[in-house]
Length: 192
Figure (cartoon, one colour):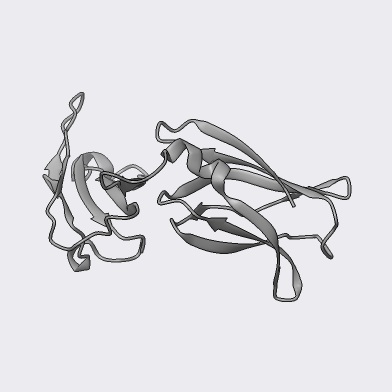
C-alpha cells in the first residue's frame, strides 16, 4: 500500500503541494508492505510565526492508496478498490498559556442570539484553547433540540442555530460533551 501524508490548515480540498504550514511530515510518501507499519514524524519548521497567546490548529492527513491489481488476476473479476483518507486535528500549544485545556469547555459563556430571524445560541470562548464538541443539545420547554456543534477557536465566539425551536424561552439549559486531549469526554451544562 502507498501512503501519502501532509498537513493543512482546514481546507480539505486543498492540494498538498499548495499548502503552506509550519510543519512537515516525514516521509511524505511511503510504501507499507503487508504486516508492516510506518512511523511518520511531524516536525515544526517555524516557517511562519504562530500566535504565542493561543493554540493553533492544523489537520494531519494520511491517504492510503491500495496497490495496482495484477492485470492477469483482475481481468476476469469484478474489482473494487478504495483509497482511505484520515484527517486528525493537530493542535500547536505554545508554552505559558494561562489555565488548563481541560477547564476550557466549562469556561464557555452561553447566551441567546438570533440567526436568520430564528432563535440561536451564542457561545463565547474566553480561553486560549480550542474546544471541540462531540455532541450537544438544548433543553427547553420540556423538549431537547440537537445542536450542530463542532469546534470553537480561542478568544472567539460562534452562533449556533437551534433547529425546530420557534423562539427563546425564559429557562433553558445547554448540555454538551467536549473532547479532551486524550479523546475522552468532558460533560458540560449551562443555564441560559
